[in-house]
Image (cartoon, rainbow, N blue to C red):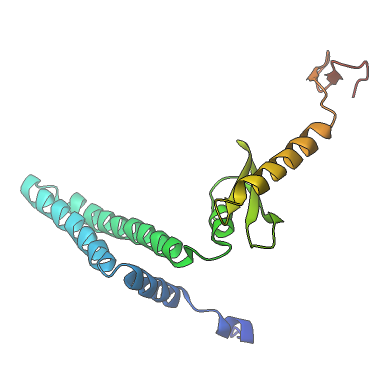
Length: 183
């Protein structure tokens, strides 16, 4: 059966088109980036081919050189694309929230939890490391906004009753150290 295309499929670009769009963005941000990416991939390939021919392990090192060259190019292209992305959003409102939301790891990001009429904004990220407040705006007005939000976060965090739990006597039992209840 033939796969039917709908309007959503036609509106989203394919993988190659996406790479071309990112390459244009990278070239616009740094004209020397693409020659560096291609040159480094070719250099890794050439080095491994030469070493393979000199040592007699060409059958092993030529495929390794192809894979190593592609890997080097892809890694460098990704780094240059990330740098181009950050340079594109630099100085625009909401840039800090965009960077926070693209962080790796298990972070819960809440953009614009506090703001004032001058467009100064505080964003919150919560993860294993704790609560991180990020201010965006004028350095003269942000300390007050950050301090107010820090007090609010501390008040909310410590209003919750904290129980000290220990492992119970039997398997799968948890015992509350400050009370006599078992669950």
